[in-house]
Image (cartoon, rainbow, N blue to C red; front, side, top):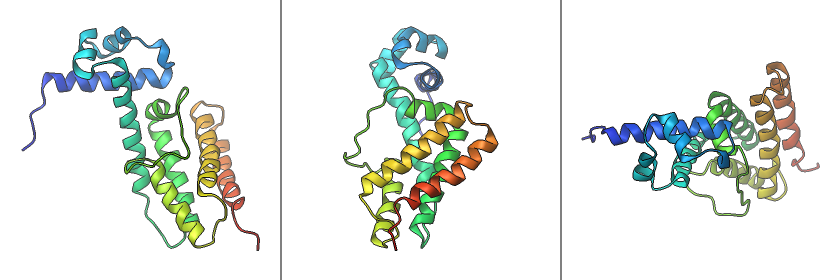
Amino acid sequence: MARPRTNDDTVKERLVESAIELFATRPRESITVRALASAAGTATAAVYTLFGSKDALIDEARNRAVAGLFHDLAAVPTSDDPVADLSALAAAYRRWGREHPHLYGVLFGGVQTFNPSGAIGTGDPVRPLMHAIDRALAASALTGDATSIALSLWVTLHGVVTLELAGALDTATAEHTFHSAIPATLRGWTPSR
């Protein structure tokens, strides 16, 4: 049986939503507990009572973004062609960013830490990408270091999506760039024959 929603749950949800909105458009250091509470229509004490700290609230907003992106990438079907799967994953990543620009901003805005040699968690959005790359390497469809391939694909994809969301690329240019840059990046890792 589901637990009934309490007033604390409602306030907690409003705080997370407000954090997502604020952190997607403003630098982390410029956002105060007071601004977060005000945007959620509650007192600053609610941040501490429900989350313990501003950083914990930020972590919850970021966890939402990570879970959303992972969900969409994990839903991409696997085919017999791992390189085609990489293109499908890139398309899903771009679609998620376009559909959730605030969450994309929370996840990738500002200075984020990234350890390309770190362990990949079960809900990590990079897991489906690494799985497809490993399959492509095993099939000799790509050659090179899996982490380097992942980074080059992500840098290309992230650049296109970030420029598109910022309005630096109009829709037609973003579409053309996406459909040319991703295949070109993957071709760079194709073995010479």
